[in-house]
Length: 428
Image (cartoon, rainbow, N blue to C red; front, side, top):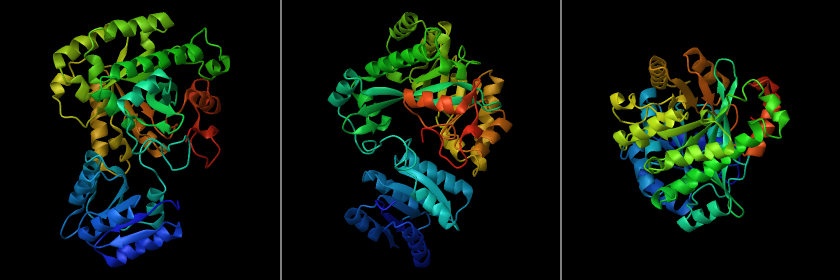
């Protein structure tokens, strides 16, 4: 962790020195300041990679500091410090995310040295712990240009990575979510925040989605159709190979295309894949951009056999009455609630409400962001049906996914005990 630099903003000198001593045990250079004025001056000159901010500052509170950091385009990873109650900490964490900051966690005072070092050793975003897994050298702060993205799509750099999904109750493998990555020969793996805004702003979401659909259908043909060659993989998933489904994310731009349904049905027909194997995920915002048009389009997709998932549910503001009229198959609980379910009563209340709503409407409930067995067990206990997250695997390439299945699946079920004790999750 020697490439890290920690800047601490806390008006308690003793507490700041204590944090510096903890950071020093991991050879992390650190600086402590007691005022926002000094903080922003050090920020400019020292350029820290990690920032710890106390919420209860006398002159400029921590939330206001984070708002200013966002305005300045701060790319450092943010840790929130405070002795305030849990609900206030949760609200501050949501504010950090809403500001677009790279928020990595909350430390409620008092905390242990191990808790601080754990947050300092974890990188923001889907790439997970630093220096583990796939190359992320280009993942941060590297926004592609429109021409770069067009070239990436044309040259095959845009690739589908896959994250497994399992039944919360019996760990049966249910399928995967396909997530877009640009695997660049010079910049490494680029994540969606590097290119999705560019695609949205330059009318490239159609090309991006078409490429993802083609890759997902080819993936299903190669690995799970009767014509596929990888019989060992089919044996690993033999119980459910006829029911495995892959989720593909859709944007509002794609939904507005009048020919989208026909194009998707044609692609499935040419590949020999039944639409039943495809789940189309869209956010509440995308679904409600034009409710009347969305209703017609989504109904047609359901009639054709595709399943529909309402993604990131719980963080939007649309009318519940309008949402329940749309023909979704499942509700996906936003990971911000799942990640904090073990520490936040508010998050647990939201999760349980969504699970109950899904059940009452005859929909499946899916939780993303599951990172430990305690969370998985909690989700099972409240009736959530499907889980995905780093506990199983972070999103990985097709080749790594096949290796993951070989190591971790027996007769169609994920078997966590197959992993050597203490080793990271496959794909980590």
